[in-house]
Length: 625
Image 1 (cartoon, one colour):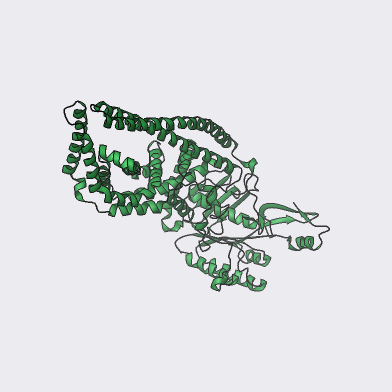
Image 2: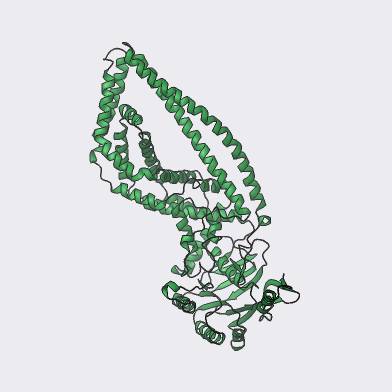
């Protein structure tokens, strides 16, 4: 990130943080630490109890084989097994509470890091960097230290993609009226989420242990919907036969204990159940497990998201609409999760034998899976897309929560370029940034001159990135900002591409050609350019820049152009109604003074020679303030 042309922007420091929110995170982190210590000590007791009751159940079964009249031992075995399962359930619940608590604790610690200007714990979205995009590359939207890294708290890959899509949007694809309506809805949604700290923190914690691989889940669900299973598994007759078998089995246990049936009958019946389940279901279980067991954790993650959403009431229209689209999703994934848990329960030989003898588990799994497959086939893609957007909105709401000094922009329907800012500054600079007032009038052009490091490039990026925030319903960094919906295009960071034989000058021409190709007569455009044609000599650059501006001024375009070429500022004399000169002035003396304030006029002072003398004469280096 750069201030002026080459000075790195100073990121917000500890003094800039949202102190009240940081104190809240610190308090909650301390409470979680104490709770986790108690849960971990309880966990050891559960493990010892599980071992004891499982061994007791086995002991009763062994004793049954040695006693002539030992039916009561089967009751003891069943009771011990029941207690074992109950304790195991408590252990699983306790373990889940530990994992959830640890994830939430990490969320609070990461947010405290954010408040101190430490962003390394968040995904920067390098995969979305695109030098050909109309504005994201120039405005540092993606990459290390980017806007995306400050925003992104998504728990799924789909949510990350959705957030990136929002930050890369081109708004001319819909009518201005519809765009403004969507922005207002988004503002309402982001504003409401920004007031729900507890919901945001719990939501973010769901992606701490493992991010949901949306593409893998989508593919797995598509594959399982295409899996062909025998129709008899979903038939009523087959289900009743299974119920009758199990009722007869448990009745045989009861009657054998009373001495009315041979004591070995339940044993042989249990063996029959195991073989029946194995022969009917084994190959299908293997296929089902292979398809979806590998995304079990991620399906469970989506289910946790849905449960959290179902417990949360929303007032904003967009949030209510998204929640409505998820109708049936929680029930669907809950059924699938139960199927996957049953598959996990049979993950060892003892579990396979016991659960099939006593419950025809494998047949139940295939039967339930077949029913789920037939019931929810048409909706999974829509649910995943909706959850991805909700995931992105949570990140936006979290940004609203963190940036308590930012304000809501006014987005208006005007049919032209409107940009009126007071106290505008770059969001990466924090509260100590120098602010500027600036208004852009439709079809007019603003030539900005100034020395190196005086603030021109940072100002241009401030204009662009705050507009991007406003159009996503996010808070902006100004005292006030009023904008309309228009096409935005920037050219500030052109690079050569020698691997494809593209020189720097050619890359500039291609960028300007891309700019011209993006313009539409029915859509107002704002272009933000930092030096036109840097890759050629001064006279050629001046003539080419004048030619370009004269051409573009005849179209439905408004522009802000930074330049070192003071001759370009003479366009104000030629067309005073269309071109206006602004500058970032510096003061030269014993020290260089940078005000970073934009003013009317043309810059008088340059600093390149002054700074170069400091390099050539190091015994008395110049200083700048």
